[in-house]
Length: 224
Image (cartoon, rainbow, N blue to C red; front, side, top):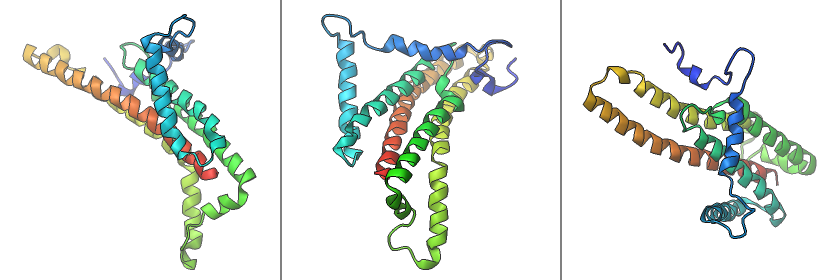
């Protein structure tokens, strides 16, 4: 009997080993094989997605010199997307449902933005803490609010990704817990609902990877 619903997200497989994180290597199977003489349709589909993301992300960049950074965010998009997609298969650990993965991505990128902004654009970073037209009496509170909002950004990014992935998996687990005691027509209804939830999970995996990448680009554009 399942004692805890969140035990399905436990990264440890035994008392001595933690092998579930190997599921992050499975994403390599979905990468296109670039060593063929003629590119495949799957390869062209991946390149089409990369071109679309590049055109979408470069609009948010303030300078053309930052366009090379977009390849990092496109790689981040595919990394999160494929990990979310692998978590939809049975008995495969969802690494993106762990704060260890999402927080490590968001925190490392946020530290990079803060170091770059405060070292290269110090005056702009101070100005950004004070919106234009703020009354004098509200200036200390606005500085405090803007500082807190900047500090909690990596936490909100990681929680947004983790909570959306966990919620879908928990909902499917709750629906299928009493499948052994259901009648045939109720079992068919449950399968139809879970099929719809699988489509919803697929869309959530795409949306969350896109949101995670585009918010990081917005945070980078603020430091420039």
